[in-house]
Image (cartoon, rainbow, N blue to C red; front, top):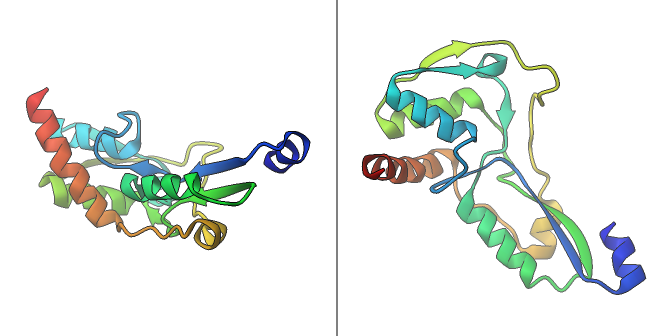
Length: 157
């Protein structure tokens, strides 16, 4: 579509696909945020797929770097994946939250939801080549930053 609109109307179009973005001020409907809320209230967390589903967790600062790079991209059109280029289990996410929040999770392991992806992992080769995109934040580091923000936010709401 980007190529077609560029060819037909001369529009410069850059599309970006984000992969499981997390971090401070994130969406409260995302797993990491919901898990933190439930952990701090002592409520059980539903771990679909027994916690073995894998996601390409991408820290917000890395996404912002990719968006800024796309603004300055000289290509007339393109679609780019912005992700961490590494999939990690939801179980690993919970373990990072436990360490960062200092709170043990109560886990309720369930089967995978029909239609849910087993694994997501961004192929960022084009974003790296055309945008210079290179994610820098490991999940454990990003969750530490989120937890610091979350604990302060939760205390003041």
